[in-house]
Length: 121
Ligand code: AMP
Image (tube, rainbow, N blue to C red; front, side, top):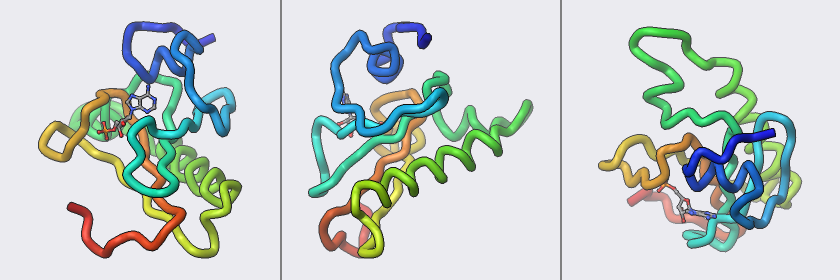
């Protein structure tokens, strides 16, 4: 049972905000991004509310190696399930406002379904 603490992704995980869930297990869920930036644009979200990579790998404290490994594995499996391989896909994790992070609950973007430009901006 995930607690709805007001964060949009916590609310999606708790089921209090509707979403298109493509995948869910005890630790992660995958939804379609509501403002797609590519033909396929998915988000893989840990249910635990970790704000960003800065919190996942803190200067002091416990680095979340295992969770991050499983996050990348889950994103790869979902991308494969969604038919993005062997053509390819891009993962992006925005960290901080200057990088464009708008939701301060860790998530990885999966982009694909078309040829993506070589640049990131
Ligand atoms: P970021 O800018 O990296 O923090 O990414 C946040 C992403 O969440 C953006 O691409 C938004 O379009 C997406 N987003 C915000 N609210 C929702 C929602 N309710 N359902 C699906 N995607 C969302």
